[in-house]
Length: 209
Image (tube, helix red, strand yellow):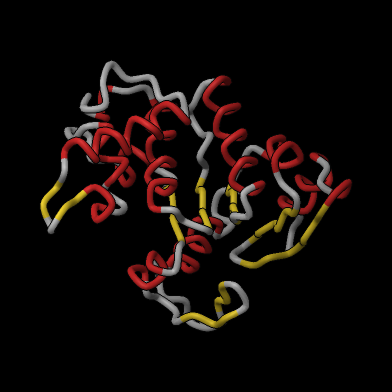
């Protein structure tokens, strides 16, 4: 629920905020706390809750927004290769069915669902192994939601990990193997399999301390 600490938890995992205590392990190895650049190098990607404010550069093209997570892939000798940029972006635009007149269309002109898919494509371009998705389906239409769910499943089928934050509890049973319920900044329950049921999750989330 709002105020549960879900976004703060993702920020701590990503190194955007420095937790006061605790330990983060990636592939079984402890990693330094509060080091965003280091976490990116270790294969972590994060999509923000407010994509328009924090997730896109509105006046830049869809293609530029996608490849900005790893410019080395589309550069030669430190100079951006426009052909490589277009090819890399086009492959992901097609994969995620991003609706845009052309790859260079300013991303700010796209619908919310297509902006969200482009933000997700950014981390696919980077080859991220662990994706932290903060409310990725908020404010998008039913078709875009289905496509985002499909990509999440495809990523996990490929052996990647997806941490999916959602306040729409009905989504959880459809897409999650395991659910951790946060309340007041603490993890208060962990559910899996048939335990992930709407009324149960809601009851835990809103229970008084």
